[in-house]
Length: 379
Length: 215
Image 1 (tube, rainbow over the protein chains, first blue to last red):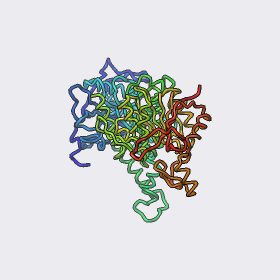
Image 2 (image 1 turned 45 degrees about the horizontal axis):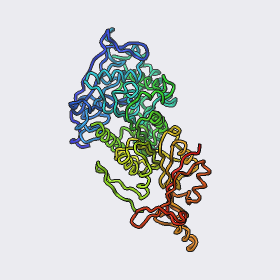
Image 3 (image 1 turned 45 degrees about the vertical axis):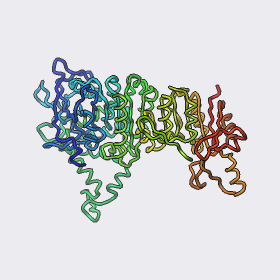
Image 4 (image 1 turned 90 degrees about the horizontal axis):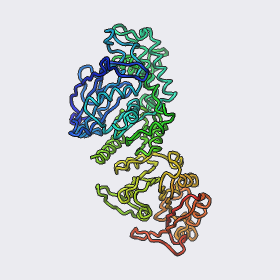
């Protein structure tokens, strides 16, 4: 990626709302406030405020979608997609991304200080849902003076938020691009989430979530991340990347120190993740995904989608076994049932679920053409 | 087979087969049209521009879907026709179109029934295997026939269910379809289609059938 099509340095901003006594109502029945959302914006909002694209991040993402990282900031997670001349063209669109409610990248979550006690919330933080995340984002969008989003786009959990936006605020969304996602988390995906959570909670350092200021549950969180990473890849991509190659040795060690490159890779990913993610946030965010089910409360996705007005571009990846193509097709069916315009493509790739984050000519071309024609239709 | 190139108002070049123009003439303005095996969306885009239809398409090829999105089509689905049209409600589409594709399907009877369930009318075009050139090649040369509409070697052809105009009438009866219109076509050297009135199953190299479900 050359410097010339980077968005350049971006400042993370913070918006606080729901100050007591006007706390935000959550799905779990509890109220939460004040809530801070960390967010970044790229490009300029046009005069009639019609060019805003809300980008929604996945489990481990942050508000930092694009541009160089500053200090100990995470690397941008979708720099390939956001920037001048890119699919989400910042010369044309005003791109917004915020860290989710319950996260640990600047937005209010379990690691934030509870103003009532002066100590981190830890497990006293209420369990949040994808819908709560979207309701919090709605406050931010209102704050930015935007009445209608040109597009909502995201992969994986970001796609769930995109779908939730279309259902919760149908009049505010023109185009929606849910990628590698589902309208309800499958039993298999819930199972993997639960194994990750159990790994964290089984770590003696977790201490019921009260580890702030002490030793963090690094082993548990690292294992959770390792499990996650397996589900993001495919058998084929793992074979291509690692095969049975050994790590820094010519022969088997006949011990339990790392032998294979794939082990080394997973350990590296796990250890690296611990440095930049909060274990309790991992619990809360995976739980939010588990609860995600747009077939409720109506009983079917088709009925839930009756209120939706957006035009859709639904994208799946052929080797994604965590959010397989048939789950995207359920979204497409619900759109079609309700006579919504919908484009569906399954992109051929062996990169598995992770494909949405990787540079792909097909993905870029689809999204940029869809946005371009959507833009022409509106203006 | 020669394709005619036309340029749309928004500067997109569309390549239309001779029978596409006849199909466009068959469709009324403002209707809902589903093109099965829509390819790069040329027919759908032409229908959208000229007849203001709600244009929907299905194709097996990812590249074709990309091309459709590039043309600004809003309803294209990447999928396999052999899986049917389960997403579509009964009689929800005015016209379901299947051009030059029925011969590549694994289950043509299943799909044609699906088309008639979903579409108020169905338009099907196919190469006529009863054409004299096909018959002569087999009779006098003793070889698997080829022509401009059927250009493939027998060992490398997607065409697994070839049919003739006469056979297609029988097929419609089996599928409980009423034949509303038949356009037997002769493709001239300049790429123009002429309607064949005399011995169509012998002189037409292709045909367009308009059918509906018998109720």
